[in-house]
Length: 435
Image 1: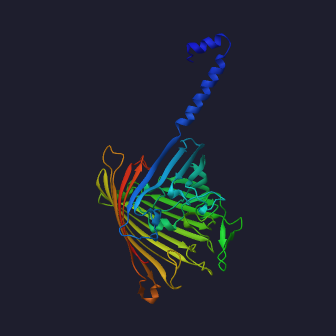
Image 2: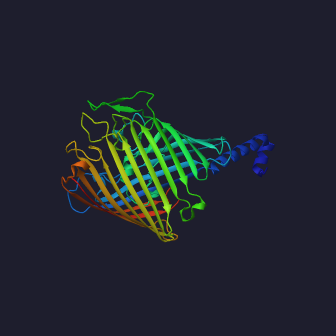
Image 3: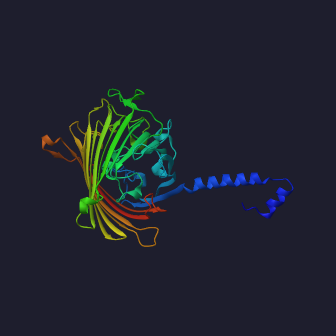
């Protein structure tokens, strides 16, 4: 133990004791050991948007975060993310935690805590907050308890973890996060399983499930036993698959009721919702090219635009294709094409009961990360067409008017994104759809 001269002098006159100094140093050492395994990260997401023309009002159907009219023709602070985490170590018994907070406009009404409803105001949200621990069963059984991200899907909530600036239609119809308990188990390097239970299907911290009365359109508390259940399986191709090694195949299912928070535009449903999600990513014989695909099917969805009496037996489908071409070590080109169709009053309101809502989209993105630069541009061009179609057996296509929307955005994320990659974005967006 090293003790300076001043401390020895104080000890000599009886003002301090050497054992107390030793204990204080031991406590400080323990504290520093704990802090050394804690990580703090985050990012700032901003954009500049120009929407040609004057008098543009209304949002863009199927878009997440960049749809509101309030974000057009100006500069936007989207979200500030702060994440504090202590990962689990490799011990048989291990524990850790993650807490991620969102601040700013994208956090408003996204994930409120009970009893604060989405319209209560405030621009802070608990994006994730959970404790995780491992039990020494087999290869190790991992648990999360608290508020965590949706277990399925091809895309992620944090913008920097996605190849394109905009989210897909599939991301919009999927749940974003849950409050509950999740267990996961890696059976082998190529097989991972997960299952969990949560309060509700949609966002909202500590809210309980609600069920919509189809006749009155009023959401009432559901029985306390009506929880949300989820499961997923993920496969990873081993070395023996040749060029396809590292390819992934995932499937997930979530069944449950929404809560009445109104978070992220959600509403209560008449019946329990069930979403089935399947996704695949794979390298190709062309080293620079990788491809992906995703399919989502949502049964008995909550219909945000429906008026009483509400039909509780609707559906929504979404098919999404992805492609990525590596141009150089620091530059990649991305493409996404998607098509979604569903029941009356899910994507749009109005029209006759036989009309369905169909949306098509094609998006191109390019990302460049200059060496030694904290920011690199990403360009995206998106062309979307929305149509109001009658059922397939009528063999008739009807247009109720067209709406064209061009956006040019410059977005930046700094410091590096949660994935560890610095990113900046230039975004060009074109939308054409039904009014």
